[in-house]
Image 1 (cartoon, one colour):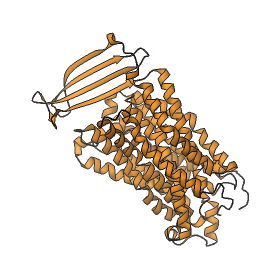
Image 2 (image 1 turned 90 degrees about the horizontal axis):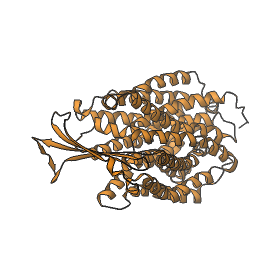
Image 3 (image 1 turned 180 degrees about the vertical axis):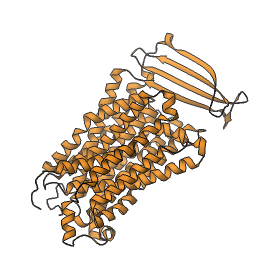
Length: 511
């Protein structure tokens, strides 16, 4: 392939990136609002079960991504990159908007979680077709020798999408009262996506088809059966499996640990105020995002393999020390309480079911500026506590507001995890594009990417949260670290396979 000018490639980057960023925004607001959504679309009798059900619904969107990769990948290799990822954009945006319109569980019962699940599945299918199209489209416009650099801009979109979702949620929380946000304000981020999708659609509509695909099509060299040629061909299937087990599987769990698991861990295990978590995560993402482009550029110079494998190895070795430090930094057990400022308030309040609850609110302050609030709600029936499994039914909500010093420690510790993410994720698009020929590229690269990220990565929040909850119930002293075994083991397997079987640089990239 001849060296191409980069003239016009920024238009390609912006059109592809904006659409992909919006799709990630749509995908992430569900995860970012998981704690709130669990109270809206699921029975409120068991908050832990409701939260796990929400994470499982979130994971369902990931699980179907490989099917979206197969369906839309086939379309992309048959009719073209451009039209396929315009369809995925509209499908994603429509599903997100509709999630914001679904009535609560209290209004329509089990139809609420069912409708949410259906729309999450549509989101997953759309995202399964989006990424492969965007990465392939950019790579096929990029000059040879610069694919890592140019495709790394696509890699930033997932983190930018997460950042924007956090900022929109934060802004909505600040504009509205807590009661307004809880009642209807949480729907606003879902509704806003339809505006962004409309703008992105208009930009994409005016783009040309990928020149490499257009040339192959004009010469009659496109595939007539991309699925068969991708997965029925033993030689090509070997590369599909290598891409999955040697790269995308490990990349998927490192990515979701560094961004999503870190967020859920701080909110649910460490009980840090939700707005503080969103803010500090946003700061860490802003500082870390340029490293996607840096490692993409570096992979053009030194090869993709060692950068990706290095990111996995660092994650394997450092996750447990990092999370231990995160937990210990803000644990009130390690702080000096100002006993004279402790307050306890007991009151009776009517709940949404028009029955009474006894609510006990404890507020504590610590010497370093940390504040602690625990709200225990005892559900009553005829003035007597409801008993479940021999125990009074009590819901406990703990919120810790951390001081500035602890805040910056957490920003740094999350930033370190984001660096691991940029190492494994920055070069991955160029790595996958270069593994497969043009005529089946969209299909072949999409499947291992979305199995690695959708199945192995997407299941991480639910599996890890279950491990932590289970270890806590069993009284494990370091229960909060148990969820890390899942990403550590998956990344370790991927690291070994990648180090043994992946070549550092593919100088014969298919064109």
